[in-house]
Image (cartoon, rainbow, N blue to C red):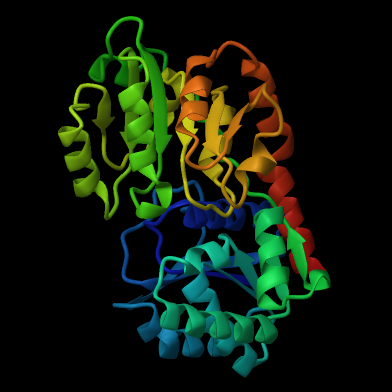
Length: 360
């Protein structure tokens, strides 16, 4: 059975990481699975765990310009199933697979309705019609959360019998180093400080100015680590400087290995306007960290289901967010959080669910 995953590039974020993990696991479940990853754009090699999966790069300068090369590749390969992720990639794959009469599964990784609010009215209308058309061309959808599934059914005309929810897996933890934690030495914080951690792309979607406002009001002993890069990085650094928070909000840029940040933090925070299924919350839980998240659509409410896991805060409720920060105690529920991730989101379980979807 030939399976092809299509992604824009390897050096991306959570979606690309999940695809690499799944792609690497399928041949372990069934040796008859011959899996390849097709990247549409010219890109550097991945640092993800699934880097051993054969990868074909179409080396296009833009996603749209890869269409002829993708058509030729899939026509020659004739895979049994094509799985695409991310909106613009899936739209193009749905057209190509329909033309070639190939089975196509769309992995929906975000809340489309919320995502479209970030574009102009005319572009939003065009995108909505294109997404509805691609939904008709492709008959199978893997949704990363119940919220994403509901949005697809309610707002894009997808029938419920064409969808299934498969949560994201968590990358197995690397063994802890035997020496003193590296970042504890390099990024020394004041004694007695409470460390809050954010890991992710620095985009408007993440709503970090709200988090900075909370830090301004919260205890001066609180430190916030920002791990990640993105288009808003310069503006966010300038905002921190103007707010005189340089000594309490620290930027560390993109890191391929974030393990030591998770190990040394006291709590993970997320203030997004919307998500699909935020894997960073699961990653934080796998290190035993308690969570504080805005209850945005969609995903956080499906992860934070008890106070042992963390706190869900209403949008723009800074007082509630700060109160949750004050109540953080990493030791309470430490093992419970790790066990939940291990049982419900381990790569073997999730890969089996993808395998079942492919074989159905």
